[in-house]
Image (cartoon, rainbow, N blue to C red; front, side):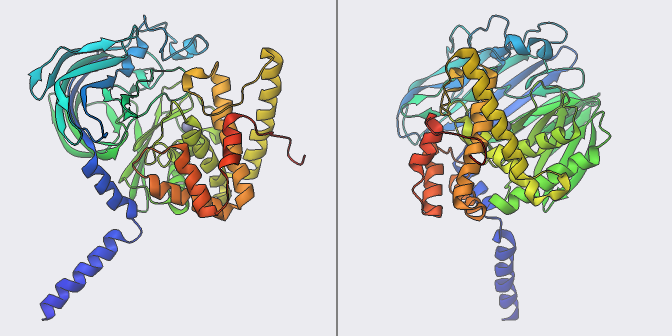
Length: 499
Ligand SMILES: [Zn+2]
């Protein structure tokens, strides 16, 4: 009797400990069970700056359609010399991306198998940015198929997501990733030098990488195995329900570790006299966004300083922060912004080519209000919003002057922004102004409740603007769709503060 009581009460306590306040951990397990699985075995030749790999994808068709082929993005081909339309780097970025002159990067697919049988695959478009895999049969809704792809990479000398610079070698968007199937077709948007031109569903990853043991590696996932022999290390990572898998190598990295609740936070850096405080910025960001929006569901987050021409880059469980940021406050701001992307982009996904304002606008808004909850950083959200407003109005004036016309619509495909400046102002800056203006209408407490609801309901999914609008209307009990649409289509009039 006593023993049974012990078992019973232990079970209750176990359940309470495991599930109280960590709803997203159990929803992560549920998402993981539904997700496709990539198994990648890769060997990095660090001297040659090449990589060879075999990738196995177990893909379940749950699209509601039957289909006969699968399509994959080949993002490394945006670094080919011959790439034109979907290039990774434009002319204005060239000298910062390639300080030693142009350097070719690419992916070469050598073999594709479907359920163990070799197939004739096609590389599509002039820019060779899509791999088409004929399945040789109809993959009916609800059925699965196993794809095996053997490939090798040429890693460019380029300060980019995929490339190496003076201090780090970055493997971002480096393997064939299956295109999202939506509305009866695969979404195949190509690379863009502006913004983050990516769109993927959450998947499970088991990635084994062989690399020189004298390199330090920061990566998505958790280490599940590691062996070293003859100066080479083979490390295996596992990650469940993540949208992508990236790695950064360096022979200069130092590492600092801290915790944010149960989450391990690591900072990989070089040339940084403020390393402890920069690590703390990531810890403070996780703690703040956990409290405001809902639990970060993964066990760790790594922040890696990297050779990267844009301010920072978000990947699941790993963010890059550019070593080109000189100003200490801006460096911390980038850490906080990229950490916010773990909530907006990572857990709640969106099509970044169509609706960049969702993840960038929310990451900027989250960063702004972070300062109100962490006054030791010496900024307030009001200062951030005021500066966003004045710079946005200046952008509008200058743009109108130069081009004689101004399109301020936000919901545009990434390829339909004419310049990087236009893209940044209409997704990040106008995005944060829109969220601030809605928060002004609702009050900040209600705004946080809306974002909590949106995070919970869209976790591990792909959110559409309508999902966000639904959270606004159902939580705030206000008809906001028309107002939000007026921001998105460019018809809202944005005026000086106090007008
Ligand atoms: Zn961002």
